[in-house]
Length: 575
Ligand SMILES: Nc1ncnc2c1ncn2[C@@H]1O[C@H](COP(=O)(O)OP(=O)(O)O)[C@@H](O)[C@H]1O
Ligand SMILES: [Mg+2]
Image 1 (cartoon, helix red, strand yellow):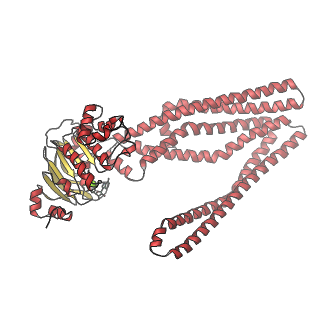
Image 2 (cartoon, helix red, strand yellow):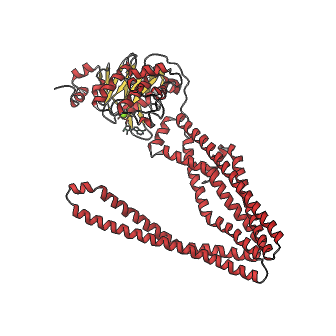
Image 3 (cartoon, protein in one colour):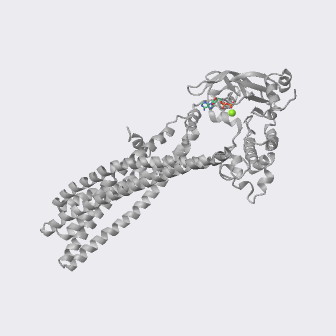
């Protein structure tokens, strides 16, 4: 059912319902005030015509009073709309954020792989917030003004109301009948014009290639032809939209004229006073407005329902699979035997992988891109579970670990340095939430050779690094991530292509910081560039989801097998 996610949204956020009810109530008040103001304006005119000055002033005063009250109502409305929208958006956004941080990582990864879900979620929440107060207020005001207008019109003159009720659908029908084929044509010609324009843009952006191929003349001819075609279509669609405006104007004029003709006749035969007629015309405008906006109201409800549905796609992500064990049973970080793993319905990515990370040792995993190295990291972080085989982390089966407790023992540095808007200190302290002293932060920044850079800012480590660290170079960003991993003091360090995005010179600098990070810790180092894994105690060469070769680096080099070949390709050994 289309409306159901929206109902569910309001049910989940029911504490805002009283506020929204007040907004709707104020719209009702507005409808009444508008009706009264219009009625009194008509009476004032009638008293004016019959020269009863006192009564004219009284009724005009009443009209002014109702208009002023409606102004006050507007101010109150805006105040409420602002408050509800802001509070609701903050709350809904933080609920969604908490879902994102606590949801099952595997499902979140799958959802976030396709499209820009985060940006969409943001705009969906904005939609929900602004609809709940702003649109509800606008629409309910239109509906109430229309309804009260209609009631008052019928009360004033049933004959004129009858005429109006016949004329309104006729004129709307007329606009619809004439504009439908025009609308279809407009859409077609706008689509055409759009695609012609984008071809023109393509041609312009390809201009250099065209030049390189030496076919400018041909290009010029095509460009001219295209541009002419696009221009013709643009003119055509402009003409069509002019016609549309004309049709609407005509229908409106016909409606007003017919109403006026009937009104004049009723006034001239004494069945209606001039004042009542004026009030009638004012009120009938409210009815027309409600009618003509109904399309927009319906489409807004549809749009916001779709937003609610997408919002619940996130909110319905189940939480992480829980586990009870919070303490390690051994200091061996990882023992994996015969691991098999496939992502949802896909091919096997890990296929009988066995490896171990002994305590205090550095283990490297190398292998072609796509062989499953990062997938192994995701299993180590307990984002996913093996389909078969056994994965023991610190002596405990990965599924038995409490996810947060396990991750306290891991420090990870990946290829894309993940930094947040905030100060140097905050970015380092994320490593161990809350209890990183400033001395520790300074020590870590010194260890990664960033301290000179940081302390040069007047506000030192409180200096903001800009969104995603945009004020830092690639090497600085990566060193900041390493400092964060350092303060975490986790027994197992995971480096997944930590230096792959850096140039050789920067990599050498960052490598020094990494060596400090690894001092006295167990580590799994995943790297494509083999220069960075030569300090490892043991190397696993992976191929198609399993270990194809393993051993200490010297032995592997002497064996002249797979690892040797890889080193040779990278120019690290001579034949
Ligand atoms: N979330 C995912 N869903 C489905 N397939 C994935 C996902 N992540 C990686 N893969 C696929 O798994 C294979 C191994 O990927 P990955 O472990 O990232 O390789 P590596 O790190 O060795 O380059 C690739 O074929 C990749 O396309
Ligand atoms: Mg990878």
